[in-house]
Amino acid sequence: MNNNTYPEIPDFIKNLIDSGELADEIFLDKEGIWHHNGVKFTNERIIDFFNKSVNITAAGEHVIHYGDYTYPIVVEDAPVFVTGVIFTGFGDFEEIELNLSTGGSEMLDCSTLFIKENNSLYCRVQSGRLTAKFRRSPSFHIMERLVEDAPGRYSLFLCGEKIELKTEA
Image 1 (tube, rainbow, N blue to C red):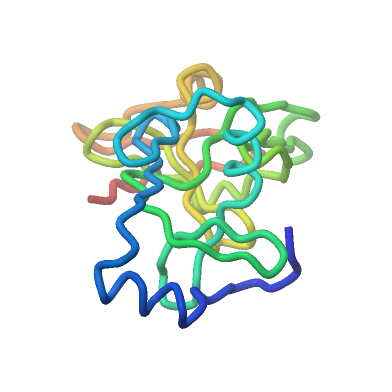
Image 2 (cartoon, rainbow, N blue to C red):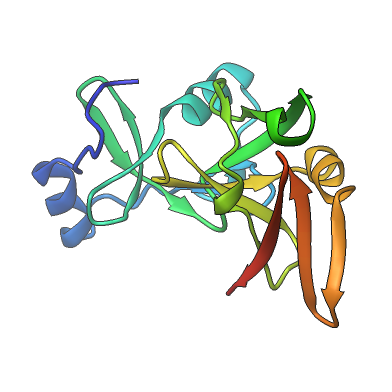
């Protein structure tokens, strides 16, 4: 991916969108399935390319960004998915590595964990720029550490800390 942290949608594409001439919609649904104008992508190479190229503009618009190419996309829920977790160490020395749909991995910042009203687990990735949704299996591995502090209030014991699990809309 380009080192441009916040790629912007090129003016000529914005003009095409505004004029109605650009009707193509690339859509990422809440399960992480890519669609083009309502039709599911089946080509694994294209899906992999999109997953690796997802980004966000400074204005908060999700895009596919690769090199000089930037194209707006519609994201139903989260632009990135946690596909696996690897626990190493224990107690204060525990670390959790996240495998991401982008093809990369990074260490979990436990302070960014939250759940939404749909009861799915999320965190922030790429230095907090993007939201990542945990797929079922990695979510279950994290949630094994869940405790109920009071009715409707939950915490997780991860990396030697008790982390209050926030709920966001």
